[in-house]
Length: 398
Image (cartoon, rainbow, N blue to C red; front, side):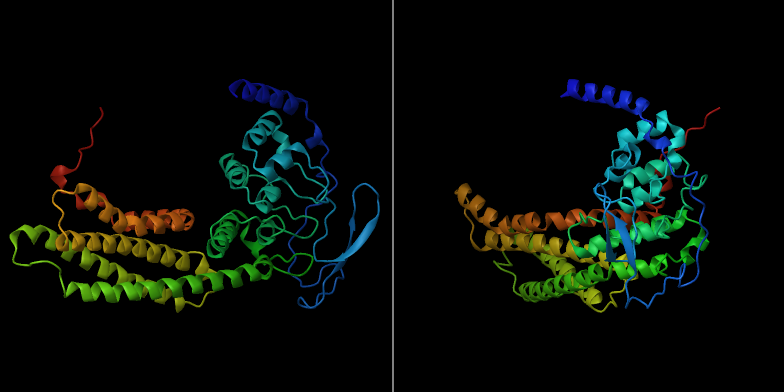
């Protein structure tokens, strides 16, 4: 495998050096477009979404044309092969992308027939690594990549709103919409501020186009998070009632000194389970009372859902520990170790099943939990909680 990889790398370097497709650019024949603030572009009348603009799309190969009702007009058809640079940007091939830019720095302003540059292609295909590469190269703010408007009047924000190439890889619709909203805000930070008001050829701003394209995803996210919150709140309330009643009826002989440690463990675990279950109920009820708008799905709702599921997982674990403690107090097998092992395995089996079934969703929580952890660390500096005499002293260098 290492030999094949080395040969492939050498071949890539040779092909990149011999590549001249990026010189066949349309940059010299394309005029820089200015932003449009009108609802009508070049005589095309728009009826607020009731009518669709009719345009002609060229079919590659046979030269025939067909007319489809749409607001997007592309010269590059899906079957048309892009240049290696744009293909690498659209498919996320970071190694090939880096080698092309390193060998041909001027290729960074290469345009295709749709008047789109590599930044347009990377944003449209949601290629975060390519986008980060361009940010690290400090070329986004220093050149005309961010100010380019394509043949359909799309800015970079319109490319985020367009779901033509979108392929959601998150666990649920809620986190898919959150990912799209984070893309929108990240791209908004790099474009000129006045480009937010720009309207495409169909007369839509980027925000209007985003809401139009993501309306179905928003509806699915609303239904999904409502159903999930209702189910989880019901389970949390049921477990809270059981744990609450168990707190007033501790098992075993309370006066027996041999049971003191187990009873203390049962009390602590039971109180922890009760607190987590009640907090989980409140969290899921706060989700159900939210307005479920686009802005809520960016930070508020995913964060509440992550906290609610974490509390749900904690009180399931503590409930099983409490159950195991009860088994230990009621039925004590001193010599039959295999019987104790079997009972405790049966007690913790639901926790394992719950963890395995919900693991894909917890993977979607990672980004949300990391953001929440960073904000907590910023507000509560752990270094301040350490006494001064225990803090590591900074060595002074002469």
